[in-house]
Structures are given as C-alpha cells and as structure tokens.
Length: 251
Image 1 (cartoon, rainbow, N blue to C red):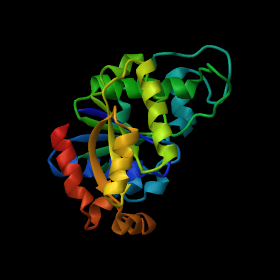
Image 2 (cartoon, rainbow, N blue to C red; image 1 turned 180 degrees about the vertical axis):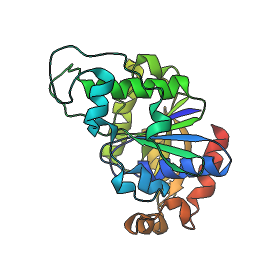
Image 3 (cartoon, helix red, strand yellow; image 1 turned 135 degrees about the horizontal axis):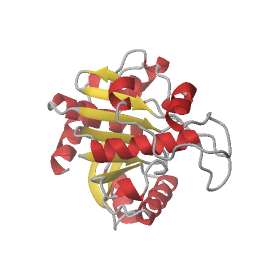
Image 4 (cartoon, helix red, strand yellow; image 1 turned 120 degrees about the vertical axis):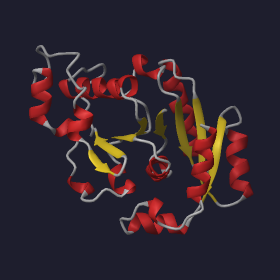
C-alpha cells in the first residue's frame, strides 16, 4: 500500500500517522515512513530515539549538489531534473524494527513556479518510493500535497485527510481534495479525530457528507500526554490503537 496522510496543522495528523505506521509494523509489514511535513516530527511520534538529530534531506547541501549538480538555494543555471535517488531510502533512513523513516524537510519558496535543486531531489525521491519500492509507504504530508505530482498520484492507493470538529479543518479538507483532483488523485478518505461524542461525529458527517469516512478516533488525554512527554502514542494505553487497526483492515 502507498498511503499519503494530510490535514490542517494541529488536527493530530502525525499522531494518526504514527499509530498507522506502528500498527502496520506490529502486523509484520515493512514500512517506509516519509516525513514530508516541515513542521512535524514523525520520528518522535513513531518512537525513534534521538529523533531531533535527524537531518532533513533538503538540508543536506552536499547530497543535493552531488545528485543534481547545483547548490541548494541557487536560482537559474542548469541541474539534473532526474537525479539518482534509488539508494537513498536504505542509506539515509532512521530505523525502528521493520520501519525505515526519511525526513524530507522544507524548501524555501522563491516564487510561483520555481524549480530548485532541493525540490527536484525531493520530488524524484517521492516518485521513487511510491513507484519503485515494495514496502508499505506512509507519507505524513503538510496541509497540501506539494511533494506529489501527476506521475505519482495514480500510484497512491489512498489519500487520508485527518479532520477535527471545526470549520477550519473542514475547509482544509475541501482544499486538499481540490489539489488532489488537479493531479488526478481521487482515492480520498477522511479520518475524524478528537471526537468528544456523537455531536462531533455528526458535525463532520454532515459537513463532509460527500467524503468517504475511514473511521473516527476519540479525544484522548493519554495521547496528549504522550506528545507532551515525548512518548510515541503507540506506547500508551489508548483506544485509538484498536480503531486504527480496524481502519487498516478496511484499507
């Protein structure tokens, strides 16, 4: 399976991604986890030690130069648009049991339509892991899908949008769907998070009634405490673990 997870910041997207990845690992799957959200730390959510020390690929200036022929931060000039990336998942991943994790990092925007060496390398890497790898791939993305393109969209089995009861979260889900449809990605599902009761569930179902719902996760103080204490949400006693397992069965 090739899965992309997106949603507004703060909805619990990385918590859900971490539970998804650890549950797949527990089931004996080999998982390639891609942290494509510059503001998230998927490694810590998974429970990888020294997660803060993982250098994002976009910040590996010598690697970017070696593979593209151009220095990061430069504009103009010539560089490779199809750099070699097939060795990077094995060479640069942090590991935990059957999980390999890569942190992509962010690329500074320098104008509409800009093509820079860093973004070219990251796009090529995402294309490789989606099209060329045989692990389960889970990509924790920002509130958008900028690392995906038309070449990879068709190979993504499901784009999972995490939402919470709230107008801004719903608006973001609609925005993500529009972006996805522009590149031909129609396999979209929603996970409702931080559900306090039936009213929250009904609110999301009423406002997103034309989305497929993969399931709902309750508001859980244990998960919040896990985040505050730097513990993986999978390593605490939480009802969400069993609910994520049922979502994987649906997938």
